[in-house]
Image (cartoon, rainbow over all chains, first blue to last red; front, side, top):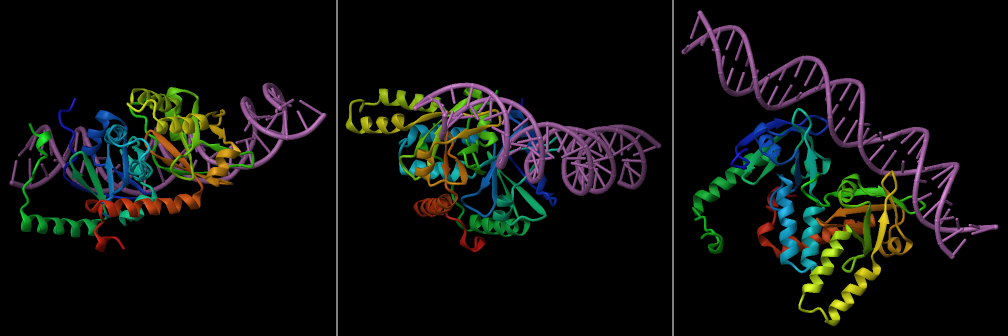
Length: 156
Length: 156
DNA sequence: CACTAATATATGGTATAACATGGGATTTAT
DNA sequence: ATAAATCCCATGTTATACCATATATTAGTG
């Protein structure tokens, strides 16, 4: 049993004409500890696909049940947007998932996909878009040198 | 045995002239873990049908019992609307349920139904209405949460 | 250190099983 | 008795599990 569950590194894989992509073996190893499937959805913050284990969404569902009002408009909006967009993807014996056209189109991915680790989740990018995005992020981080402030309550 | 019980994704299915619709297989797999039937009712917040497992309503009932407003007019109204409207639907051997005219009319569904995952529950929409609703939600959520805004240059 | 062998991973293609959907038969209500 | 609901079977379509080859990575050896 692993002690850590982090998606790391940046891996480039091919997408065949059916939309199949190999999930990087490192990622697979993590996912397999928990299940045989991952969840993907259109990122809310960038033109890319985002993926995670279903446990992430499960936690989100519980949090929402307990925090927001059952009948609130805000809860309604968020649950539609997130759960309505998210889809389970099981990988075959060779470790591939079949991405949908909706996702591929949103991320502008055709024949090549870039997997970018983000810790508890990961992103899938079109190569050119990712190159630009990485440059942008680096420039911004160097300019601002932001401190990583943790919420005090969670940091005892 | 599954570890998670989330209704996800957006699935379009046909409604035949008897009013029968296939419950998406993913949804069925979840429901079957608990029972052979689902509960549907007219949504309180949107012109669509809402569905869930009976356990969900059970939880709602408990929550209301424990709430401070047990005798409030508001709770009385809500419980009347939901429990009074909710109806159990069993699915046949091919996984179809027979929706009632009352529900179909309320959602404006004729020959096509869109199933939208909402985590612990799901919604059933008329296709055109859902298209509009999704656009509205995306706009609203992104407006209210500046941190979720997409980079405009990459998204055109 | 270079070269080869062995293993693991990625990619391409095909067969199979699962699913949605239509039609009809049997049963249940009114 | 009539209509409605439920069940059962048949079919076209599509996703997915499986097999085969190619590429890359690691380990082994002279």
